[in-house]
Length: 130
Image (cartoon, rainbow, N blue to C red; front, side, top):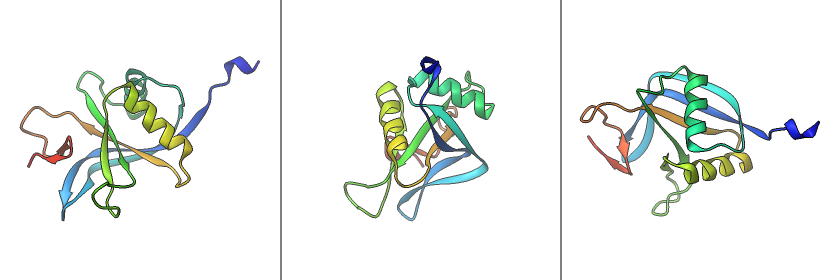
């Protein structure tokens, strides 16, 4: 009876925006922002999380999208957060552990579309492309 039990936790998702540097700080700028709260299983691979997010947010997987979150502290400035990309299974594991153990409420998973090269002005690997 208990073998069907799957541990889950809640996250907030934001989609329809992009990361931009505003006054020297990375901020998620809403364009057609949609916010939703979901319960997801604790054990997911990167591929499973991508599929799950695409299904829940009605996003076409074939176009592609990026997932990221804000880490609470920057090593260079404790008052700033750091945007962390979720690109593989290890990143997913770290995100889930942080979200599952958070004492600060819901952790937000930010979803941005992959745009053709030259069209995306958001942050890539911590650097502003604009």
